[in-house]
Length: 372
Image (cartoon, rainbow, N blue to C red; front, side, top):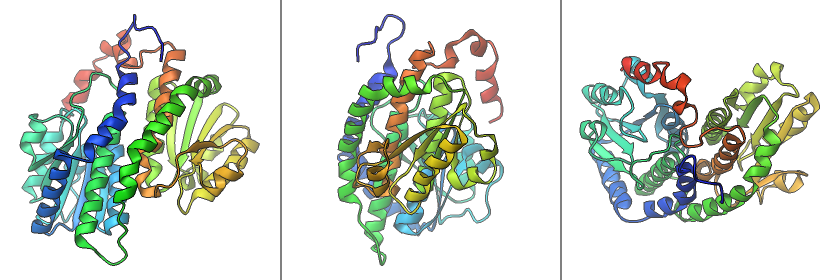
């Protein structure tokens, strides 16, 4: 990457490039010790219900985590926004409940109060964060610490990916410990994900300007997925709207088909994530429908899937990884597309809109902290 660094430090670019190294760190050392300790605590407390919480990208990480808990261990798991969970505490939260609160900074307003509410109900609370010695970690029963430390750039990128990855590692270890009938050990596939992410990063770092160029003329962006990659679709949409200041939304395809599709037009760019699961062909089939309506469509699918092999213009992703694990690296294309779109739109990819006069003078920072 050769962009001039005279205007800003491009921290987000460096952060994206280093993420596979951080995933490698999760495969050894303190993360493995934390996983062993958490498995022991779950067994001791007889945990049978899990809530994965967060705000913004942290909530989206919780969607992928909760999905994996259900699919890999068969445990009852849900993803909730942190504030919603505290204000509308679901019934049944007790000493057999675990609350995993994702926080990239450890400083999100209201998270400490959410932890206190969960603990008051008897739940075992876990801070999933990259920063120790914060009010969040000190108020939680356990800190599941990730590598990388504090970040200066605004977009979550590496913190999102590492949070999803190490919780997937924990879920797999928990399933391995229980050894329920039909359990599939994903250990080998998890070990290959850092390499797959490097492959994605190298490809989309090179192709990012081309894809950003194709997208720069559209006024709306839509990202479609099913299953665990609802988190990817919504994370991608968040990144696209942050990069451009234009509307972007992530949908479950089946929800989109029964409502919002009425507004689809030639102004829209549609990105379809045809992950390797039971909805793969269904997702890929929407490409023709959306094109006939007039939208521009980009199809992403694993290189070894039938839909990618048959599609004329499929954007190939690394294959051989079970769908439930793919959210860790399926976000990479959208990182680099969003990054290059932000440059095309003349925006700071590290701070996005938050450094502009309109945002700094709006009172937004104070407002976000008022209702905690």
